Image 1 (cartoon, rainbow, N blue to C red):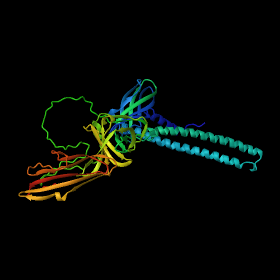
Image 2 (spheres, rainbow, N blue to C red):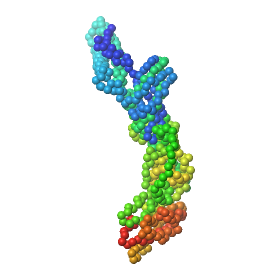
Image 3 (cartoon, rainbow, N blue to C red):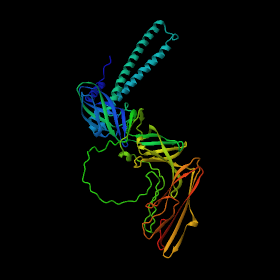
Length: 539
């Protein structure tokens, strides 16, 4: 009969002392996730076999970025949660000093167990080698060994006894090795080295102090907010031609780096802000005051803008002019002022904690659209196709970037901004190369001359537009003439070719209908007169 060695007795006593009051470790599984524009709300579940009385539970596999004041724990009525604490460094929460008795005893125990495991493994290997050697000797002492029957019988009896003894020892060592490995795993769990139950290694842990009235298996539901997770809307706009609706694919790009993988989770995407102020508003006295008034042009928010050209004398800065249809990616922070929109995803998703964007399909929408072309030749001699969407609020659109596919070709990107006051949403579908536009100065109608103390300059431009398409198109053309805040600078619009003229902004607008292969020409002419000893810097 094998008796425990003094070393093993000491070790078992140490292990018993170490784990007498050890906490209960359990890994939480992610069930549901609601992703906002700058954070996520994670719901997890854990099952724990609790003894009666007070226990400490360490819940692993939680996010590294838990907002501690948002943690909620759901338990049966027989369990009372006394305290909840989030930490990313469990062992040091209780003993900051690495040489403290608790940490040192655990590390010493690990070293002892590892040495014992090595000895047991070597002993088991020796028994395995002895069995192999006995099997080979059985073949040597066979029919050709020269042994008589009596000697052969004794040899076989010896072989049978030794082989059975070796196999018994081998099995005994196997049982000890299994138990020692289990003990080693518990020790390493104490220092949180082993993370076999976690889908992704995370440092985040919730430490619960609970009181249980009835021993048994207990379900815990954990809910909290965490950072390092976000989503943004993206769109694919596909139009076959200008007579059919737009096929819109509404998608989301979900990104998370919370420290834990979301595997087969029920995903919800929300435009809300969980950090909204919950304080009831109060009214204060309302005092009126003057405000500076700034001039605006008469273009809609969704069209290319021609800024006012203000003619000034030398020394006064000219107005900054915007360039047509710059594509700007809308930041997700801007949509937090919108009414909350939520998308419940029916299909379970895997969103890994790797900082990469995961595409999630939300819905497909047919957008009934009316099309028109738009051009501002003074800024850019190109025609842009605009799709106008009426009653767009019913589609729950959010600001975001969109890919444009027109006539089965990728055109480029545009931006969707439903946060406008207009009843119509205008989408830029890109440039149409089949529309030719040219703006050129007419030299013989332009020039400079001096009149006494005045200098007079005349400018004349012809805008030539040709529709090279097989169908008729509606085209809005905008141009402009300069304005002056200085009474010494006289400006006269000589010719506008039946354009709608805004005297406040200097914007000229034509609404044209061009038949297939039709060419139209527009003329703009204006005259400027000012003192000849002055210089205008921005003509």
